[in-house]
Picture 1: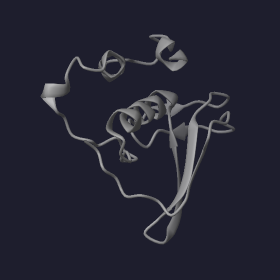
Picture 2 (picture 1 turned 30 degrees about the vertical axis):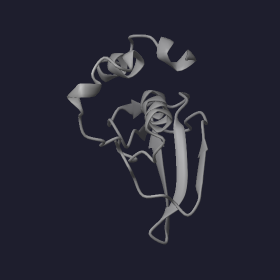
Picture 3 (picture 1 turned 45 degrees about the vertical axis):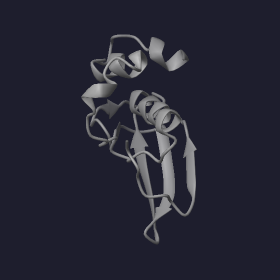
Length: 107
């Protein structure tokens, strides 16, 4: 489904933002004081770090669980219409907007 490049190493954490961050996957701004996922790793010999909002972090986690593959950092995994409805939590997240609540985050 979404076979990304395997990093030489991978480290992720979920800190509170000391400044505004932009999610690398969806572009939403993570405000100061909000939690987000910070990922660092080594790809193609270079070390990089990026930020994801918690929604996109959850989507990446679920995609990895479902596909048993690495997930592209941008969540650019294409679209398989035959999978629609198979994973309701991901279908719900596709249309989630900030302010809709975060019940998905507790799953």
